[in-house]
Image 1 (cartoon, rainbow, N blue to C red):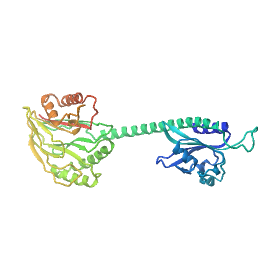
Image 2: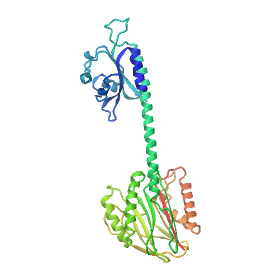
Image 3: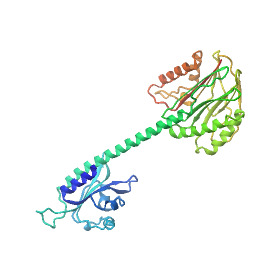
Image 4: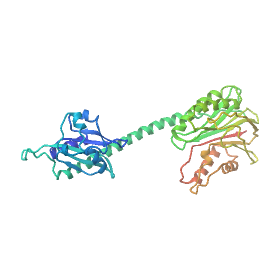
Length: 397
């Protein structure tokens, strides 16, 4: 390795018996040995030097090279290493490893051996050895930094791959096709702000020909929110298959989530039950931005809330009832749409969204969504999306 080659070369050039490199641990409390020419390195790497103790521990704090002729005459001598390895250290030369003005560890040489033409008692390191060891320390610090950056890069790649898999798993929670419900046209889409998100929507056909449409939004975003989405998906898909009124299904789901969600997390939800060839619709709104019915005439009607957010308190839901007539559009969305803002922090807002859909209500539903998304993107410019963006559009035929 680069570190071992550096240490071996330093030993040869400065006639040292042993060389080692120690790095400050992640807690910032100790020097831990990561490489050494010492034949007892297997034992050495299990040892550590507390910062501020010994010469190496001092150098790790001061950042100054230390050259000691006889370490036993230095009151800072940390003899636990010698005792553990059964060896004797005499002369000592230690210098810091520095990366971008930050001390990350130390490089030390021990027990200089005099050459054939030198006094046998001349075992101390020389003044001219100091710039040499500092040069080797710069090379070692660069190698450590490169290794750390490479490790971070590999970890990031692995994380990206895992997130990609998570994204694929979450994408499979969304409907793969749009069911046919007599008298209605359905559309849904979701765009996460990150690789995975905390929004959810689904179409669930029922045996009697009716269909439940749901849109939910978990507080927060990213991977933690996506895990809660999976929990919601499982509970919702099981409960909605039962022949229960909407409010009963969501009472049961809320009870489950109140017991299982992490404290402080919650889910807002809107769900509507479409009855085939019927103007009558049933719905629940739990803490969610109230959906709108865009009437064929252009009038806009806001649905009322009928229950709490899911996962905080067990408050009973009620089922709301209203009517949709031919040409009416039901618009539901997550707050990732309405909370988009521009550079001046002005929100896109729910009313602007409803007005935009009203103005293009005669287009097909996919086109309405595409035009709305384009208008939102134009509004925000280069401002990043604040949250996941999910939309459901339902037209009464």
